[in-house]
Amino acid sequence: MPAALLLSLLALARPVAAEDVLLAHGCVVAPATDPEQAARWESEGLPVGNVDINMAPIFDEANPDENNWLFRGINAIHIDTDPDVVREDLLFQEGEPFSAQKLEESERVLRTRGYLRNPRIVPVGDCAEKVDLQVQAREVWTLVPELGYAHKGGQTTTRFGIKDKNFLGTGKSVAFQHENDPERSSDVLSYKDVNFTDLRAILDVEYGDTSDGQYYQFDLGRPFFSLDTEWSAGAHAFDSTRIDSVYVAGDVIQEFQQHEQNYELSYGWSEGLVAGATSRWRVGVHAEQHTFDRSPDTVALPPLPLNRELQYPWVGYQYIDDQFITARNVNQIGIVEDLNTGWDVDVRLGYAKASALTAEPLSQVTAFNDTAVMMSITARRNLLFSDDKIFGFSFGFDGQYQDSGLQNSVADLLAQYHHGDFSTHQFYAGLQLSQGWNLPVDRLLYLGGDNGLRGYPRNYQAGDQRALLTLEERFYLKEEWLSLADVGAAVFYDVGRATGLSDQPNEWLQDIGFGLRLSPTRTGAHRSGRNSVLHLDVAVPLGAPSDVGRWQWLVQVKESF
Image 1 (cartoon, rainbow, N blue to C red):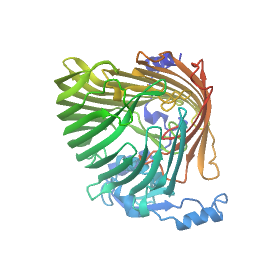
Image 2 (image 1 turned 60 degrees about the vertical axis):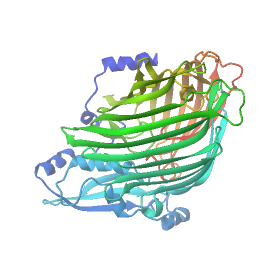
Image 3 (image 1 turned 90 degrees about the vertical axis):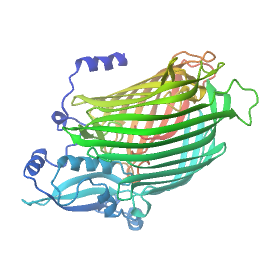
Image 4 (image 1 turned 30 degrees about the vertical axis):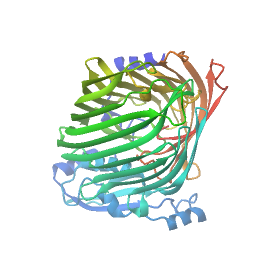
């Protein structure tokens, strides 16, 4: 069994150190700077000399395959990135002592920007008194029409608009889009500046006018932008009015209106990077409110969720190991990925006066007011077991503990196993487990064609427990397709179920299928900085109930293979 295989690997295999694998591992990218040379520069205290920004055009006109009238025209009209925008992301300055760690982390920061392709920082020249550096990256086309089509779980989403992740070469992101999905239609305006003011603050605002309400989100803050950053501060506000639905076997059985408000202020401090790791402390205040009412178009309803309100101070602690390596074709296609082979743990605790509900979903609920310990925990790590095996896992918990036990709480575990040469193919196994405690109906755990069980309708099963096992054999085309996209393919098997509701089928569900993957190489990455990957899948359910179609086809854009 795959699950047993994963447990055996954890128990028996010895993780190898990242530096032992750099030259042997098929997916790992060797560092641009020789480690021994970098160590010598650091020991001698050589300063950083000139820092040159070298941005290659979108298409390489020296390559005959890219030297045509269309690609030359795109290069000609493209507005190049301002070199100062790239300099703002560097964690070192000319004249300060050379640091290999700051160089490598600066590369990681640049890779999160959606307007650069595979940035590198390399030493240039041969000078005994200083270290001259050059930032090398390829421009990408970022002003693109938002024309989207997604079909998953038997339902369709369409989207159109325009977005630019590098507006006029400034590194700022602006977007407008109209979207129709199974829940609602919406018109959305957004703006994001990842280097707002000289403090390296982030300004992120978004407004949406929807068919069932509206929402806005506002974030302004100075993050821990590097492992050596000593302080952070931030403000967050979110306000949304919408119609939420409850599903059983893919059908809507309940609708209600929810007004959600969420506000937070925070401040953090750290001693920076010490002995290869960073510890951070944060404090803040949080307030949220969820108010429910009947949907205007629905008359007969089960009992509504009770209104919930929380206000509390909180304290948080984060620990991050600086054990990053660079790799390719692990979770994405073609581009350089950053994997931390050490721990990344974040814990947050608060103490609140809570107004909430306690009951089984969809049954009669009872109100109470009680004090609550608010808890949020995340932990993740990647392990290299040999030159062709990677295991990664993450754990998350979000909820509250009261005298009556855990309320409105969810724990998630994700384990991922990768095995292959990471050049032409890999075998992937992913296990997702989720457990909820006393969840209100607006937080049920769903499973269906839109979240991993590809052969079934959207939101086909629901409850407070969910399990999903995915097995895939992934294939990669070595050459870039038409100088426009990296290409992959997969054959897959999914099995899972969600349980906890009495009036739905609770059996294990299975499907098999195959699909194509396209990852654009000359357009900007997703707003989060990760590359977009177009998924074209055909899935066939195995032993499905009669209300499920004989096959499902899915078109969707994701941030991973």
